[in-house]
Amino acid sequence: MSSYPPFHIDSRWIRSMRGSKSPVDPNVAYGWFNEQERAMDGELKEVASILLSNRECPYSCLMCDLWKHTTDETVPGGAIPNQIEHALGVLSPASHLKLFNSGSFFDPSAIPEEDYPLIASLSSNFEQVLVESHTAFLGEKCLEFKRMLTGKLQVAIGLETVHPKILPSLNKGMSLVDFRKGVEFLQLNGISTRAFILLRPPFLTEAEGLEWACRSIDFAFACGVDICSVIPVRGGNGAMDHLAAEGFFEEPSIRSLELALDYGIGIKKGLVFADLWDLERFSTCPKCIGSRKDRLHRINLTQEPLLPVDCSC
Image (cartoon, rainbow, N blue to C red; front, side, top):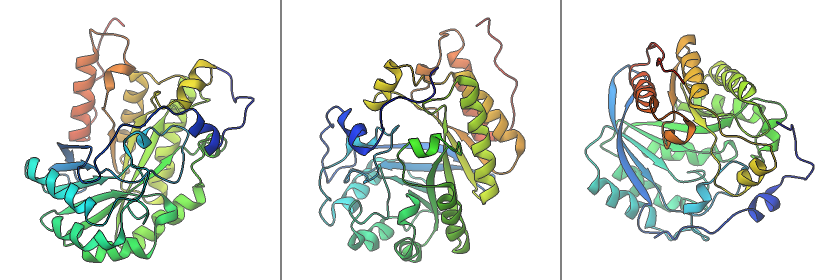
């Protein structure tokens, strides 16, 4: 695989590669689901996850496809609480709540600050509420929202990778120093943290992708993160497809995801989860994909190692 493209990657180029957005209703979340997840106390928790419809993130990250389900303008006041209330009315009861908003929860252009009290009220029955944020938006608004909650707050940050050349190329607008400072800020204020780790971002071979995912897990835990979620990088956002066509990107194999999760579980520094969404696309063997998916799911829930799947592939 070639190392780096001859053309400049920036927000303008990334956006020029995009297709069209999917229409979303500012009063209805574009997705919601229940799932189980192991919590920091070792217990399995029922989780209600809501994918909020709101304005696109101001950072045009190279690998991101979340812009597909966003609005062009800031949603009106009251829209986000309406989305949460509607989704909670459909979802099964849960003790933990995840609010994903395709960007940063504390970005005032995404989630109007005036909605914080009602969002907190709708979250009052949950032991923990997770939101996501870029380090640039971690500050007083985060602490203000925390004070409104009856349960605990957890903030997820996209570390992505600690590779010194790849991280800047992702156009994320965040350095490793920014990440460390963000985690420190959250820790000092009693807020739990989760890091998103990319498995095989562009410009890396399969072996390099696994190596740097493991290094990124190490760095995240060294910073004090409680949980790492390993996410295989996918094509489909325009920019990644162009890089793939030019030989600068390939999606990782399911085997690398297994090895990254095995590594993270093995070091026993915190919880480590593998992202299993659309997992079939990373497998080339129809005989063992079911067994591999089941194994990864069981490791996610138990945080215990399991024997690898035995297959002729």
